[in-house]
Length: 418
Length: 77
Image (cartoon, rainbow over all chains, first blue to last red; front, side, top):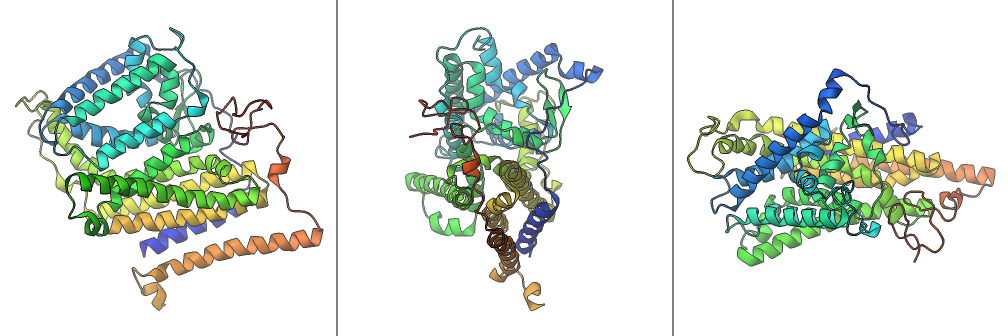
């Protein structure tokens, strides 16, 4: 019944958009400028910014050291902060508040402190445009592989090496290509979280002043880059695999496997899910491309931004309970980050409240997230189509995408329910 | 009524599929009728695009370049 309702909601919104949304509202929207005020002075205060940066860098060091300890994932602060607070919590925060990672990123702060900023010294090499965000897409895949396939589950402490390795790659990229260029193209989390931040109603103008904008409007300003679509599809496909990997069907297929065969099967499952999601999208775009005479790739890049709210919806649907329940483990771990019996903030005995969310509340939140995410995707794609093509062509480019979104919605809900 | 009362079956997809089919079919028929009436050729946005512009970002691409200097996409082989 929920699948039926969600699919119908999507189709109805498409029909409503076709008849009521006849002019682009997000595309070509003039950039708003902020007005100076006392609040703006606080938000743009350099001293405050650097205090936050240094605190974040210190916390990062604690998390990295804790992640090297050969203890179980619930004993130290490392895994809960990386996989729950950071990976899920920051995705939520970015979608609702804006680009916090620009200030919180320890890599960005280290890059500035080490003098890798383009304003301080010329990069060794110009960043190759043809690479686009491929480095970020590959590194993001590495992270989701580590999270979902968990190939080193039997070796606690591996997470520390992964964090150290990623830090070295990032600083190396900044050293060679410049801090800003690498943050825009190679720093996987800056690119990934930056996409969600474009959904937020808050942004900064060119002078750094905070401005309001309609939710989702920032995605219309996303610049096309090679590899950006791949990164979005990795985000979308990996979350889908996370749900599918917990289904009874996947359990029947791989339940008997252990060790290397299990790792290989799960890696194949993760790659396969990303490929299926990508294939469906490419199929829809090849239909659109036949109508516009552009082939499949140009519309695939043009409408890539419409997948971002869907990727976020999957994060909400799959990880809301993970954030609110497992995330509580971090409260106790904050007081004892290295499992040494400390109680720094008096929270070491904090117990997880399992009754925080009922199963019914979680299910309704998942349904709402999936439907709102897909309707948002339909809105963004429609807005871009009417800006890029004549009206009747614009509508026809969207039919196949709508069909794929109905399939995504139905599959997403079926995975969550089973 | 039996169809709507049923839960969890493949028939839940029937109504959305029907609506999608209608949404697909009606504008296509209208478009074909209009094209026949007007004797107009179908619009082709690709033809409307300026030659030498990047189809991805709209920047101007010099003839000698294989990739768009603005966005980095390959525009010529």
